[in-house]
Image (cartoon, rainbow, N blue to C red):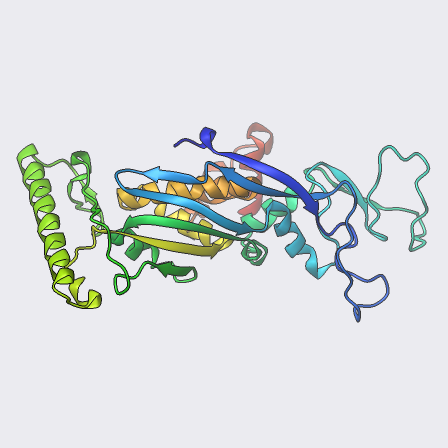
Length: 343
């Protein structure tokens, strides 16, 4: 399923506005969030809610908490200001008044600043703050949003997913229920040789005979394992014992909940060409939900992480050397920003 197929239903709910959670005179009493009428948090619900992954798997949206706006709310909790707008705006550095371009008679600065209002421009609105946070690894605000999905996948996929230990998992238990007769068999094109450079990976093509023999043997072993499992259950063997010889290619179901930061960290590793092919498919399905629910956060992740390049000290020095004799006026804004960071 492509990104174009993922839709979201949205509704607006109040969020903390200019005044956020801050009391004007004291922090002793915390009041409910005050909402600037036109500033609303977008609550999204993705459609469709299930992305199928053949032959038997899926990733299904269950629930989520938070939004792009929530990231800004969390980041500005320390200053008590809150989310303002994704559109450009100006804020007084003294009294925090948001400038209304339609208001000709601007009220005086509440703090009686000598020169009146001192306007600070936010040319990208609060998107600039969001991008700054992600780019510079200020990660806590991204932990304030959560996504929960239900996965039906081969156990071998869950074993890789469990490596991300900050998520919460609730998996179907073969001690209580009979697992379905659903097994993962790779496509012929996915059966490759051992990589010469990546100990965990696969690379190169194998002869058709080797591939066919492997797939035939795999299906035979899966059939025999399930027949033995079913027979043991019918004979009264305890389910926790009868399941012992089932392979990791059998499908299970697991509910997965993780905060947004850790979800994107997981996607950075699993939605990657170095990951196992079947795992990449599940990561891409999860990514489709994240993109639909948190579009601005996901765009920042793509810009600075997924498609970004991270330089070592020696690599950074080489880049500086190459561009040292080139005038700043002769390069684009992205290169100028990079060179500024490498100073």
